[in-house]
Length: 615
Image 1: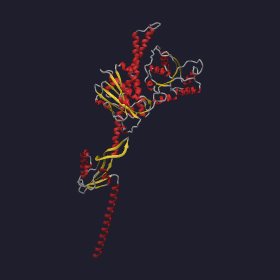
Image 2: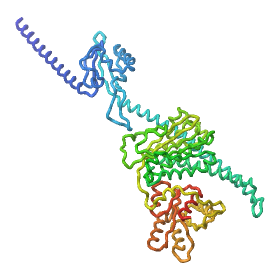
Image 3: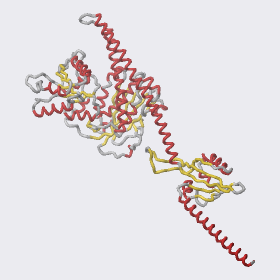
Image 4: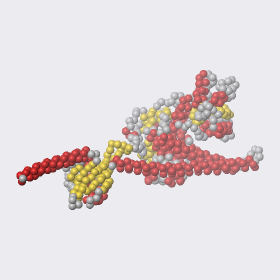
């Protein structure tokens, strides 16, 4: 009996041992599977002992923290935490050792660098981690180990920061735009108010003269001077508003990618002289001396014709000259010096002016072709200058040197931003050198290429760009200009009425047509088509008209000349609001003899009529 019990006990022990061995092997197999799964997991996992010794970590944990494998000494891994985040992390560790389960975010020392880009920016910066950890306890309640997992949230944090920055930039841009709209509204309303008052004064004066005078009307010198002063004030207001409108439209086109550069063969010095002539009256009125300096470098380059966009070049120059006059007219010494120079290599500076690098561009590394020349223009004034701390605001959208600038001088805050963008579009740069209280120098350059004279220009290009002093005509038509028979083709009745009146006052015989078809009908009645027909010296042609536009009408006229239906050549000037260089080039291409853009001064139109007619 005892032996049977002993054998059964031995058998039970053997079975128990086998079961224990199986359970132990099964547990080890499960542990190996768990470790294998943990090692392959994209989430970092770890286990620390109660003294901070590293008992286990998977590959993702080592990759995230950068901790060296094999170093399991107590708290050695803590150096992976960013020094600025260490105090907060120590607080988290104390809570874990107290038995809490916690979730927290922290910065690591390892830098975050990604190959991805968002919004043109590379994802890089600090490594951020989100961790969940808990305490595993002994039966007596003491902490046996700390277990947890960590997720890399660096990309999320970068995107969060990126969105915060972009939001701040958008809010700042919105603030600038609101300030710009306030400024622009102010700049528009002020001249409108002045013009309204001038018109009221002129109407009142003329009504009084009509009421109190007989035939002929006798006006006092005071009345005439008052009306003339009102007219000059209105002209100044219109010029100011035109500048604001042009700036707004240019910025709109820049933002839409609609502003194009259209290089043509021009003589830069001739274009410069032509632009300076536009300011003669304003300079004389402000008692400012203007000097034009042709640098020896320009002469050394033997520049005649080069290929560049004269419209964009002059847009920059006119903006800089307008600013120079604005800030110089109240100075003790009133002088502006415009210098033109040229270089074979891309310039880095100009007479103390260091050019501002273009965003996202590296001009210095661009290969320069043999025919390339860099045309530089500098505008130096003796105005008030700019304080150093205000220089950062220059050339930025909707920004002026300081808020006081608008209060004292007006303007939209767009001019210099436009100049910078236009220079960049022409592979150039712009910069400024200034001394507060003594004046400023703004300089820019554009890339051009040597080329031959355009067909038909010969050696007359400079004379055409800068005409010699021409005959003038007063408002009553007095002067030595020949009387011209003019066909005015214009669909806008207001413009038609005003232009016809001005031309008739200048002594010309004017016939009007509302569109191209009416123009053709009239031409068929002139001496170009029938013997003893009506006289016609020149046609002033609008472009955008109903029924038949100006370009189609011009094409028909040139075709009729080719077929012999029109004897001789009809002189045509496009008078249009289409101001882009490519539009003007197209108009010339279909047969126009010249293009003048709206708005314009009547004196400029008269001079162009005389030039085209050979007067």
